[in-house]
Image (cartoon, rainbow, N blue to C red; front, side, top):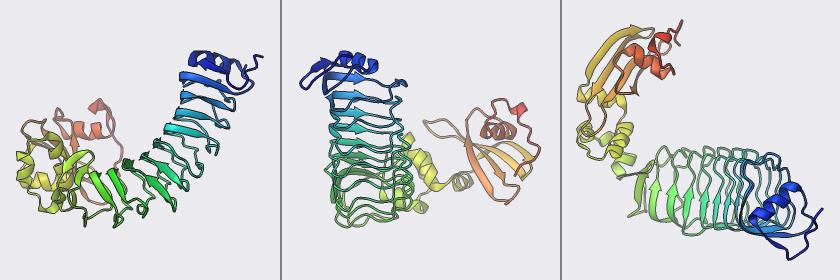
Amino acid sequence: MLALTAGVIVSAAEARALILAGTVDGPLHFRGKLDLSNEQRLIRLPDDLSGDVLDVSGSGLTRLPERLEVGELIGCGLKVRTVPASTRVQFRLLLDECVCLTGLPENLSTGSLSLRGCLSLEALPEGLDVCFLNVDRCEALARWPAQGRVRFGHLSAQDCLSLRGLPEWLTQIAQLDLSGCRGVTALPPTLRINGWLDVAGSGLESLPDHPGVALRWRGVRVDERLAFRPEELQCAEILSARNVELRRVMLERVGHERFLDEVGAQVLDRDRDAGGERLLVRVELPGDEDFVAVCFSCPSTARRYSLRVPPGIRSGQAASAWLAGFDDPSAYRPVTEA
């Protein structure tokens, strides 16, 4: 075994070879990007590892080493449960899709922290100090630390289904994404947003005391009426909208049923299924593909639905087959429909 003592500095390529060979005995510092991603045979890293950028995404690691010090740590998809308290990451820490992760060390400080899809994480650590924070799809996340900082950066919390609010210590931020956070119904009164706020599918119903903030709906710039009072929209406004993405948001907010009723959709096909009459309808949208939808009733509840389908579909049977995942409409022959 090659023994490496304190002060040894090697290239990333040399460090990779030594680590995979298991010939590291002592502190090791590497230069550049050490890429160990997708190395399933990698089950441990040596303690006292330091360097510039370390990528261990998709590897066989189930724990991180003690006293790891790097500029960037990319560890997406690892099966780690915790991050050691001795870990130091200066610029960027990416732990996306670490579905087993349940804890982070107190006073964790880094520039950018991304935890997207960490499904088991219920709380963020006390003393958290970051500039950018991404907790998208952390569905179990319900608790903020009593003290923390997100310094003038970007907080993204898409589809955090267990969140019921934001922390009082969050007083200023540039960009805030709360899309899909239906449990967040209000913002802290002291919060100031300098850039934009995405409210799509959140529990927010208004935006008091936040003048000048740019509202978004899944990334599309919208006004307060579209975000919070869609019942005031006229369907004629949808047809006259020049921005295709904005028009699609307007369609979502108005609802397909109301839109089709008000604009007088053209009927392309009419037949029957288990729920009764089934219609395939079309509306021409200037500058965009036609809006084609299949309208049908649920056999169990009699509730009426209108679902958009690809514009090239020309029969109700083909539309229902496409919705069920069939490429060949003739192969879609359900015995019963619930």
